View 1 (spheres, rainbow, N blue to C red):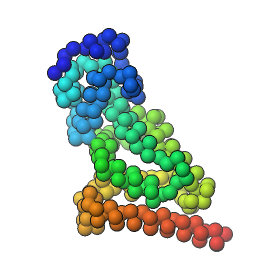
View 2 (cartoon, rainbow, N blue to C red):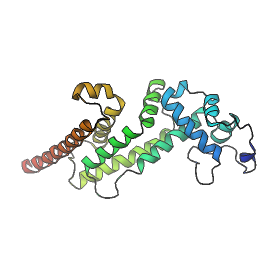
View 3 (cartoon, helix red, strand yellow):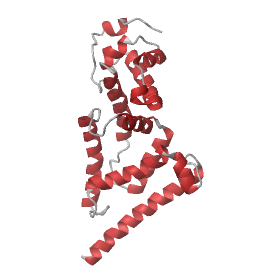
Length: 222
């Protein structure tokens, strides 16, 4: 383990904000953050120990406090990194619901640390005391605004409030990765299998078509 703090002392770092990782962040910051994501995903917030994170990253635990302040600050930084990775998947072009749902589903299967982190958080914390709530609210607001815009363009039905429609879409995307055993029992296939993923793509396309038909039906009856 590297007990030296010279890398950070010479750069003048004290406590970086949770979103302070960048090209100028020292190697210890990134190593500790990577280890923290692994531990939070495996053990949840309560089960994660700063000493264990530092040991896996091969740095002294004092650098955790120097970079992140405390365990909650470390969790904020870890979760923000995972959410930043996901926000990059938001389409710049008009929303094609089936494509967005399938892409998010595929990325969640490839990297389940995000879903494990938020499930672990849900098991340990009251929903009324969300860690880093303001920042995360803005993250989800961007998604809801995308849905609202699609409703305004006539691509999604406006009979469902955009925030609840986004909640429904998110639930469908995350469920197979969050509860793969249930997905297998319901469909007969593991979510990791090619068969499931082919049927999943067809299913979300069918959902999009059904939503579009509901828009047409509403327009015809009005």
